Structures are given as C-alpha cells and as structure tokens.
Length: 56
Image (cartoon, rainbow, N blue to C red; front, side, top):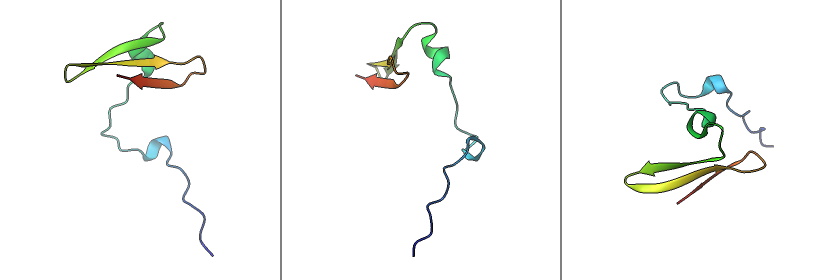
C-alpha cells in the first residue's frame, strides 16, 4: 500500500529568495501588459475568469 502524497507546500514553505510581484502592480487597472525579455515582446493578459495568459 502506498502512502498518500505529501500536502502541497504552503506559502511559508517557498524559497524566500524568490521575488514575488503582484500582477496588479504590473498591469494596473487594465487587463494586459507587454513585457520585454531579451528584446522580444510578450503579452501578459488577465482573462475574464481571472486566469493569466502569456503569449509571444
């Protein structure tokens, strides 16, 4: 018999060295923002259901 999977990591279990950025601080009152990575443009969009989509 296998043991149950471990519980998901809580917010406090995450690596403290990772920088956290609220999406609202990037997007503001809009629904999308363009991010530049290595000279390439990416669009980060919040859907009507509140999910995130990142497209090139």
